[in-house]
Length: 75
Ligand SMILES: [Zn+2]
Image (spheres, rainbow, N blue to C red):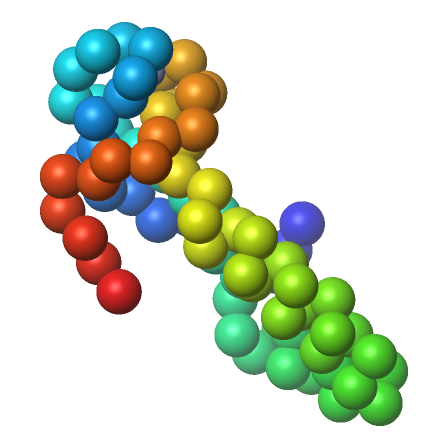
């Protein structure tokens, strides 16, 4: 999707059992805002739901398992 970017950080993978680079997808702000305006706010609902789901999904770049324990928290 055109509106996605990736964020990387360090995390502890439960499958690799070591510190790995984890990645999550992040929604770009401007393309989504333009879509929300263009669809009279309808896209805003999907945007909000997607952003909430994606923000919690850090994945190990080695095995793809969802990682919950991050070494460094970034907000
Ligand atoms: Zn892993």
